[in-house]
Length: 198
Image (cartoon, rainbow, N blue to C red):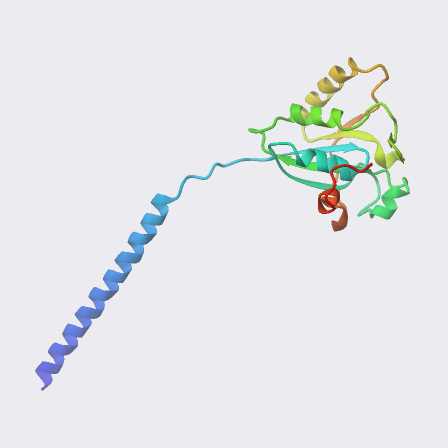
């Protein structure tokens, strides 16, 4: 009986090893097939732009319609108070502007095109005011991210000034800390089925 038992054990070991190899080989083959079927993903480095042009609800809604804009956020920037709230910014004493941070695909929309949207969506000749909204938090400003954006912003402003009779009062200043506004402000008009403030 013992030789037969040893033979049976040997057969079982061989079967287990063969099964393990088959299972391992299959899963390896499936893994290779998955990898080969995967299409290469385009590596995109999105860029940021930050604009202030009055009430940030309408400005955000305008930029969200632009092809190539990946995401937007409204918030407060350009001031001196740490972690400002909407109520604080509304007093005009924090120095912040209501602003929109735009994340965009530079292969689909250029910074220069975003500047054109900026000039078109507000009146850059009214200091600290857009329509009925009055206060330094509603000022016109471009917060540039790097020297290329600064250069483009200044050239764009000069070109725009040639089309206007009154002087442009838009600030062009380095991007500072951006404090995202409270959640209820994000995509405010979109949540309410509207596309403009007034």
